[in-house]
Length: 151
Ligand code: FES
Image (cartoon, rainbow, N blue to C red; front, side):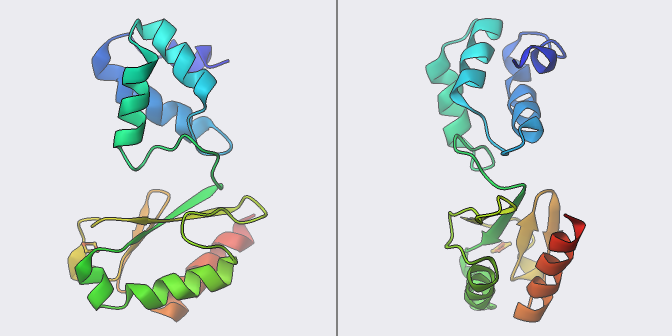
């Protein structure tokens, strides 16, 4: 099932991260299923437990189905001091989901994360590959609404 992705890479350890990203990015539910871990293990000749360890070590990977868009809100102190709690309240209310959850329509998963490295623009949210800083409740509402319109 993942053969087309796997064959793009030499079966060497240094390609494991690229393979994991590729599989997750191409899965409609934005995660790495167990059968993918099994196929990677067979292809690369490394134990499934090692691959699972890598997946669970990095917060950008998931072993559970997620939404089309992944919203990661920074909850580290500089962002918290500059209003990330209000952004979280706004997101939970807009999406009708708690942190860690996925919206009923499968459009968004809301996650909390540690510092995204742009503290000067706190509070900060990363949505898929894009970073948004200096957020206000109105600002994040506009961003979510425009993503909904893209449907
Ligand atoms: S503390 Fe939030 S981006 Fe650094």
